[in-house]
Length: 109
Image 1: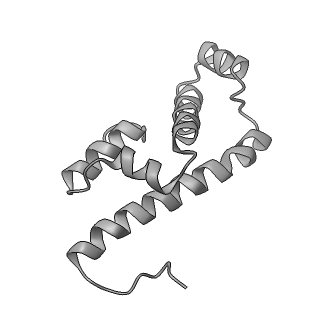
Image 2: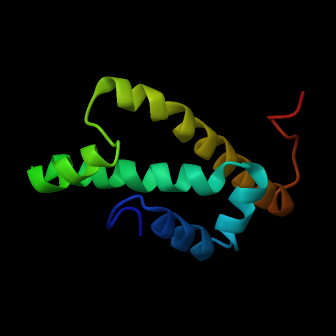
């Protein structure tokens, strides 16, 4: 689904479900205590991307009023959110794969 549309969390969840990773949203919440807030930021970033890609000034203005800005400063500020989201997703996928293919956890000390 992510290749056919936008990387909204729902598309990511559908893709994960298709490959056997059930309850992705719940599991991401277990790995990242800030998941609910981070998911909202991810949604805002996708909306910002779409507004920029489609040159939608009305949407850009609405996003700006909501604090979602098309600036390097904003992108840098939310980069930490994307990092947390990616780390949680890596952990969930790893936990799923280790059940299928026993190996050494590369994230353990």
